[in-house]
Length: 481
Image (tube, rainbow, N blue to C red; front, side, top):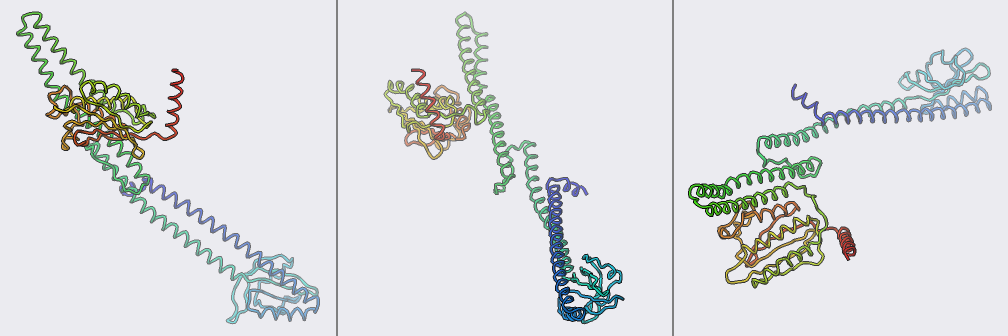
């Protein structure tokens, strides 16, 4: 009973019941309409046939009198068709025709109107009760003439149509029930899968995803969007957990060091200079902690931003050139070089400020960790179009990163042993990775042989938006001029 109640409350059951009712009513209306119009058409044909018979018999009577009329009726009555004839005298006695018995009250109505009557017809095997449409006229001399048409064919057609109507309604109900069972089971199965996944997620298993059948129906589109949302939620929750774990582990050391310095200053500091030196050291450590928290907050804000936040057509080629102009003198002073290999006037849909920050981070990262002892640092900033994406990369000629560690270094506070001697907190690539994900891409680290290539990709701006951005840039330059 509970299962039946659960099924009847489902949307699939209600929709199926509605469809069954609608289709049944429409089918009944159409069949009734067809029956009514067909019956009217056949009645009109019968009336026309009767009128034609009456006209012919009237001509026979005018030309030859009663004898000619009787001969014509006898001749026509022997034909194997549905026509009916009856000629009676003034006393109601049958003179000619193929009707064996007829209610006497029928012969009394001689107004010439057409009416439906019940009669007995002479057949080879005896009298047969039938229905007919007839007209009755009174002739000179008290004679009465009945001409009609048997309705057997019409009744047979009505029975066939009624049987077809009943069969059609039964088929409609059965097919609707089968369709309901199929749709209900399929829909209920999909909904039960969604409910089961939701329960797993509510119990803390954020890795659960809604099932996708792959037929691109509305359930698949809903499941895909919800899975993307769950992916985003899981990423944010994992990021929060990672931040918490990293803060607990990586910030414990500087905080412990600050406490030790303060305790040492309190216990061993004898002069103002000793205390001031302890305060300066503590202040330096505090600034480092503030910078770490600022970086963490910046990454958290980027990961929490909507994908459309601040997105507009940006000339990536000019942006790369501006960053290169900023750092080229620094590398040239050290004997290195920074070159640009970019397609001209490439525009992408992106947040220009965040992209600039990621390029600066990648260049700064290369300056810190991409140097070789006996070889000057050489950087290449590239920008190329690949299909509908714009690929931006920074390549150095340094020692690179082992392939096994290339995914690991994107996490927060991860620093390889080789880079421990350099200042930093292990958050630069995490920031770049967050910006890449915000733009629907990813940060790829690849061996450059020698060196390392850090690559991001962005959505290519459509030609119309490129032209609009170009026009607005030209107008801005004209105003500044």
